[in-house]
Structures are given as structure tokens and as C-alpha cells.
Amino acid sequence: MSHYSVRRVIRLRGTLNLAGDKSISHRAVILSALSQGKTKIVNFPLNQDCLFTVGAFRKLGLRIDKTLSGRQMPAATLKVYGKGLLGFKRPDSPIFIGDSGTTCRLMLGVLSGQPFVATLKGGKSLSRRPMRRVAQPLRLMGAVINARHKRCCASGEEYLPITVKGGLLEGITYKLPVASAQVKSALLLAGLFAKGSTKVIEPVKTRDHTERALKIFKAGIKVDKQSIVIEGGRQLRGPKQIYIPADISSAAFFIVAALICPGSRIVIRNLSLNPTRSGLLKVLKRMGANISITASKAQGWSYEPMGDLIVRSSSLKATRVRREEVPSLIDELPILMVAACFARGRTLFEGIEELRVKETDRISSMSDNLRKMGAKIKVIARRKRENIIIKGAKVLTAAEVKSFGDHRTAMSVIVAGLAAEGRTRIDDIGCIDKSFPGFTATLNKLLKFKGFSG
Image (cartoon, rainbow, N blue to C red; front, side):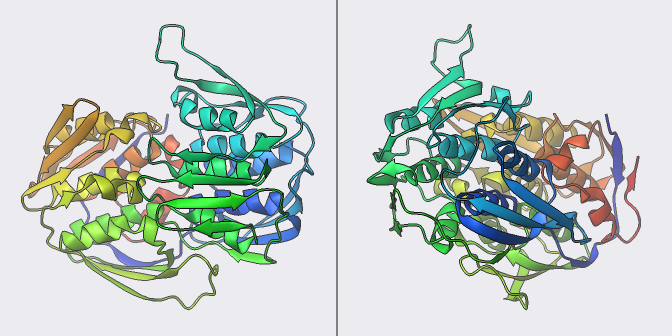
């Protein structure tokens, strides 16, 4: 276990160049693999999740070369030698994908169209996460999928390991019962192999990285406000080079840290500003955050907007985060809870029950930790819906807290500790490598004095 301590700092100052967006990077690798020829991916993040996607395609016989780029946050340039939709080989053993939910669900879509049998195995955390939501619609398309069921549970929920027998798929029309970019993406990827067209209807708009990526790879895709249609049987043609803008989910921790630590000013270069991921910035601006955006000088990916962010410390006020906003900031909710602790008034988070089925139960992990630090938090459960109310306090107090093995919980409580009185001790931060290797080193570069000790 990797214990860490953090204490209150004077301010944060500096400029960050962060590695590429995790969600975009998964999709860039997958579609590069499914296209013909070589694609160069620049600013690829070297976190565990994205590397499991790379490893999965290597297991399927694909050549992927990696060159380190030596940036502030570990990043690389990849060269992916695509083999087309059906150029892969049957793996000789199960494909291990760690605890990467994106790798798992998107690979289920790819494997459903392959003419062989393959098994996905996951780590302890991923093996507890529900998979029926993606397995069931893929079965409707014709895939044969066998998953593990819990003996003590009669709900019919399914879990890893999952074995997929791919083959001839038929296009379907499917309305998502739960807002999920991962399920949507799995169906669109399976639709590449299907006869006819596949239509996915979204009750609530989720992040659209897959749709944008499919366009740049020349897929037959049509998008309107509530549905996406993909035509099957068309070979993909990728661009020669893709630049991955900085990850807004990673940047979120620095943004909130700068807002709640007086006298702070930071700049984040080439940040992804995808409208379906900008919920964090919208909420923070409603709370009074001093955030400005300027045009990026870097040449980005045509279908992914980006810019430079300037963040200054601010006096925050409470707000209401509405249910319909949650899909655009689901990964940023833990750090938004930290921001709410420093805001004047009561902040309401509506419809956040999906946090129960992340890497850990983030409702419990964040409310337990922040309460230990003196925050006033109330969780309200009504039927299947859950809300959280946080009454802002002027100062939090240091405490012994836990990461619960969850990367976003760990980084969120570290940020809370930067503005808390005393020294906060986190039991284990090794889980941070899942999404952000080098997080503490990057944060320390912004601090007026070192806020960490091992």
C-alpha cells in the first residue's frame, strides 16, 4: 500500500501540459485497429486503463509501437498498424483487461463481430461491475455471450469473466434504458460488423467521442439530437495522425484545487472542450469560478474542440446540479463534491445513483471521507433515485481518510487536504495510476511549497 499525507498549501501557480484524454484515447486505438494501414496517435496517456486497451489488441495479433514523449504527465506516441474489421486472430488465452470498464464494454462490441470465440477477464473491481446492460443488446444483434452470475442474486445481473462468440450480426434499433456512453459505443462498434443499420436512441445525451471518432474514420454514421445510426459493412479509413487533447477529467482536480486555495492561478494547455464533457466547467462557472478559455495554438483533432484554460482562486457559491447534467460530468462528481464543501450555501446533486457502480461506491467513499473532514453531507435515497446535499463550510479539518481503491476518490481527498487545516493522511494512493500516473508529482510542481510526504 502507498500511504500519503497532504497539508494545507499557500497557493498553486504554474502551467500544465497534460497527457491525452482517456476516453478519446481508448476510441482512437480501437478505430485505428479496425481501419486499414498505420495511424499515429500523439499525446497518448500511459495510464493503466488505456494500456489495457492497447494490450487487448496486441493479444488479437495487432502491432502497436510506443515511443515515450517525455511530457509533464506520462504520455507517448503510438503507431497502430490496423488490420481492418476482420483482420484479427483468435486469442490463445483470455484477454485480461484489469479494471478498465471502457476497455471491457467497448471490446465486447468489437468481439461480437469477430468470427471466433474470446474471453474477457477483469480485476477485482471490474468483476463486480454490471455487464448485462451491454451484453443483452449485443445478444439482440446476434452475438452469443456467456457471463458469470452471482449465486446469491436473483436479479439476473451479469459479471466478468465474459465469453463472446462473435459472428454474423443484424442491425437493431435500441433505446438505452440507462444513460451510458460505454453501452452506446459498444453497440455502435458492433454495428460496424452488422447487416444493415444499427440505431441507438439516447434518452439523455452522453459523451459523443465515439460518434466524432467514427466520422473521422469515414464510417457511415448519422447523428441527430436523440439518436445515432451506423451503417454496417463499410471499411474504415483512418487519418494519418491523431492528436489527443488533454483530459478534462484529469484537469478537474487541478481546476478545483486552484479555485479553493487562495491566491492561485494556473494555466492548462490544449484541454479537451468537448461539449458533452464540459458539464464540470458549466457548474463551476455557476458557482462563481473565475475560469477563462483562450484558443489553443496546437493543431488538434478535427472533431474534438480544445483550448487553453486559465483558472484563478474564487469565492464559490452553492448551486443545483440537475439530473440531466450528470452524464456530462459523471467522472467529475467526486471533485465537485469537494468544491461544494467550500461553497457558500447548500449544493444539491440530483440523480447521482450511477456513482454506486463505479470502481467503488463513490457516494459512500466521498461522503464518508468528507464527513471525517468536517463536511456536512446528506444522502437522500428515494426508490431508485439518489441525491446528495452538501452544506458548504469555510474550512475543512484534516483527517485519516481512505481511497477505497478508487482513483477519483483518492485524488479528490488529496485536493480537499490542500485546503484543510492540518495534515490529511490517505491510506493508499496506488490506485491513482489507473487514470493518472504522476498525479502527485504534477501537483507538486504547482505548489508554493511541497504538500506531500510519503
